[in-house]
Length: 186
Image 1 (tube, rainbow, N blue to C red):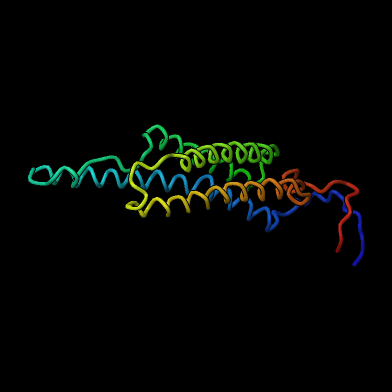
Image 2 (cartoon, rainbow, N blue to C red; image 1 turned 90 degrees about the vertical axis):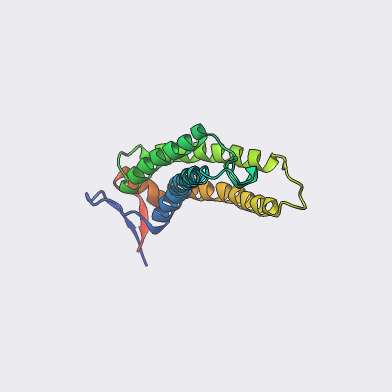
């Protein structure tokens, strides 16, 4: 095992496994999951609306059997969530490709911004008082547990992404070459 000096050979440094993992996990956390969540809520609402129209022919059902609010967020929030997910997907694809050179900083800024937004919305959801008696609502404790897991992952994932994107192999990948005089071990 020897120490050698690397030279700019024209060959581009590879995307390392850690960088690939950081990009894929951040795309999953900040793009795929929010888009799927917004899509699932809108699809469920559409299906319930269709079922409600089918049920409206017979008005012998009690009021609790149809209608109501189940999602707790407005259409604007869902569309914002889907739009930011799509924008981050484009940023993630550019980060995967490694071009333009500034994408490393753009990705870091997007991760920090989306982390802040996610932390604020998750903390607000955790602090929201329950309108149903705690003893009756068994879903409240499950929702709180999932929100706590979301809070923890919202901190850990960006920390890993930011840490790895600032390591020397990731910087070399986005720069497109190794620095002259850099030391490498074989």
